[in-house]
Length: 367
Image 1 (cartoon, rainbow, N blue to C red):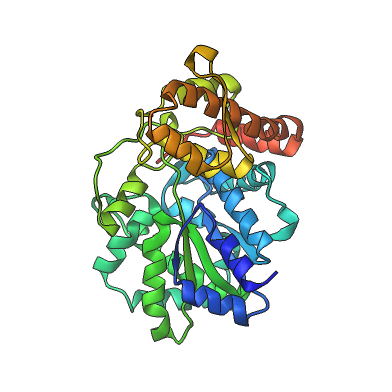
Image 2 (image 1 turned 45 degrees about the vertical axis):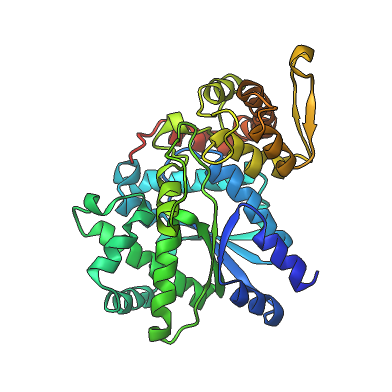
């Protein structure tokens, strides 16, 4: 496989931004072993954004011959007071996440799992943390707290200021200890990746390539139409993302056929609207990545069955009003159920996975 093919796999949706494409191309041309990482707060049940969408993107990296690290940010969940700040429960949630990715199709044997609670045991971690803390202002750090799903106004104690500084430390430590070249995170993590790229040269380090993927929109999301500048567009995507702490916005990987259908039927889905439409997003980022085509079943009096071979073909038809929102919703619910059925089966039949699911399901989910 040549570098162009690897580049196209990495760039494939749901990838939304590469900073910079030139640096990534240089990596692909000159380095034999390239390592990427993505990090996760283990903080509750997996929805299709955390599970399916991440598994889809991870598979692109594996096919592109990139070594991949999944980083379980257990200490970050503690700083962010997730699961009531119970570290033992957070650890179980991390183990549950691993089972969730496995159920979603990730070949765990082809990736490496690293826990934050292990990485921080290295004395160099805290030396690096202190060096970073001297290079950034409080104002710059405050701007980055959105990576924790918080607004600046929510910062009441130092833990949320420590959070972005620790994440910046992660990047440098993972580079030193694991050879990480690429930070492959969601668009909600962009601010800390940009912070890292701003300061690394002062620390005598090479800038990591930052690759950000799309955040799947929550089912109830809606917003004003029209143009947005770059920062406003990113903030909108973050505020409308699917969230486990807002279960009405999310389809969880454990949802039954009935739950999926109910949530989809109640979802925001304006006719002819492609942008800011969560049901259309599921078609674009999940269904067309899991199926070769998208079949919508309709009664003959409404046009009969229609099959789309590409997202572009579907989007054009929907924008022209040739597909009714109700028909679209029914088709999306049917396709999602087919995708989630083997995932549900894994958590029903695998004893370890089932026990972890029960522990996390019964925990109190805190924002």
